[in-house]
Image (cartoon, rainbow over all chains, first blue to last red; front, side, top):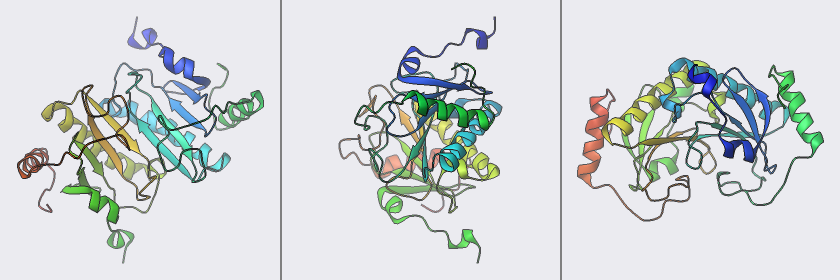
Length: 143
Length: 143
């Protein structure tokens, strides 16, 4: 059995997020807090820190990140996108790709720990995100 | 005059950090808050968001990030490294590469806005960091 077969999405990520697509490197999640569009890409790896990834895996992960970045800017009209790889509360490596605007819920603070409110996605909005992801080539069948 | 010639380090980054080295992509800074070793790599670009960088520039930036990541882990004994590219208070693109350990000043919170205290680097400690950077190939003459 390979490492990839044994890999499972961390239960806290699964609980905190909608699983909106699969990418070449692993699941693409959307944080349940809908104050901003907050994506997480979770590569199927046991490596914990972004810059410890093998170069080819890092390159593939960032290529997926670029697609999400473009979607946030071109389709969802975010002027800025925040990137983070922290692994403080959830050790499993995940790349945050977060749409930001100056009038959002916590600007100029980072989203982690600073998003107030309990905004959630309506089914229609999740479907819209899924459609956008599908249109740029993501596999959204797993939803 | 090219874009690169016009480029200047943002005054807030210059004020908040020690300029400890130059890399192939731009200055390498060390945040003045010495609670953890908190490096910032500032590529000479007018691009604001990490995933909008041309792929070759991004690759070079991450290569520098890998060197800092290795230095944090192998020389400074940090078990974990946090990565971020936010641009919320300073719009100029900069990549945070931050050494973290579970007994550090703000674990499990991200460093941004959460580092208490006023720990500063003594000259000897700055020299040590400079020596380490120089040993892995960085140009530290600009200090």
